[in-house]
Amino acid sequence: MASQPHRVHLLANKNAIITGGTTGIGRAIALSFLRHGCSVTVNHLDLDRDKQHLDSLIAEADTIRAEDPEAGRLSHLPGDVRQVETAASLVEHGVQHGGTGDSTSACRSSHGPPPIPAGGSIIGISSISALVGGAQQTHYTPTKAGVLSLMQSTACALGKYSIRCNSLLPGTIRTQLNDEDLAVDAKREYMEGRIPLGRTGVPADLAGPAVFLASDELSGYVTGAQLLVDGGLFVNLQ
Image (cartoon, rainbow, N blue to C red):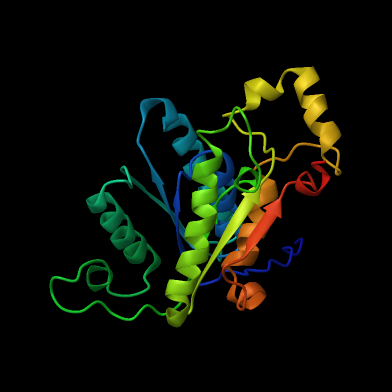
């Protein structure tokens, strides 16, 4: 009988909530967290056009679990996190799914003071666009700069609770959102020519950095930081 490969579970007994986790970068991070032993709750909008992505995510998570019983478990909850009720329900659902304590007292304060948080990690997905301007991106770059600034400020506010807050700054990552655009050879080759590593990124390129920032063992003294995941694009913009 062939021996099973040694698996390192850097996020064993951890519990994560990922918004927008059925496609693209969020999906890649969710799957990597599962492989590292983390229970994951994915939030989505429950759109008809996205059902195929949710179904395939569930199937892939089941495969990971079948191959490695110590892998994390996947759950999902639909809803719009812009609504306060949805956000509270998502946290409650995630805590129950992970089995990390009394989810009701963690989400609601009407029955007494909330408990002191016991540490954790918040990872904001910003962008290289947070650091540069763009004549055609006046609607986009401020939002990504806002995510970066939010993580910096929450790092200051939540450090006393041992909650670390950091940002990932992807460069050009090929997802379903820009796949058609990058299918144009001339444009893709232009972008690749600006990237020192010579290729555009894929969602899986963000998974390892996310595991790093989620792991207390690997990044326990890292907070308020920003990590570029861009193949060197930013340092070559001249």
